[in-house]
Length: 83
Image 1 (cartoon, one colour):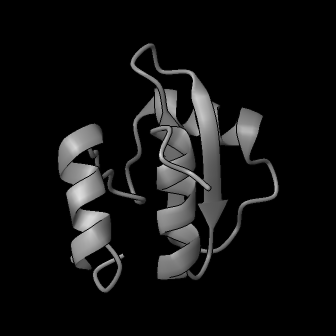
Image 2 (cartoon, rainbow, N blue to C red):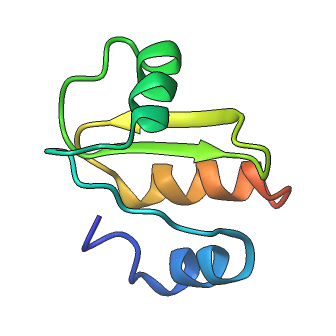
């Protein structure tokens, strides 16, 4: 994620539309464990990325290598700028 989030187009989308939360994988919050187990049961490879709405409902997620173009496409879709 360190090489993805700073990219200008991604950073702009995140600054305008996202509240980011980083959690310690060695001591994750119970709510995050439940969300991941329910919505991403096959996730095994770090990093885990989950997109939630303002009510904490799961919208999308991924695990493993983060490809900037795919990450940006998901962000754009979620904020209504896709296509």
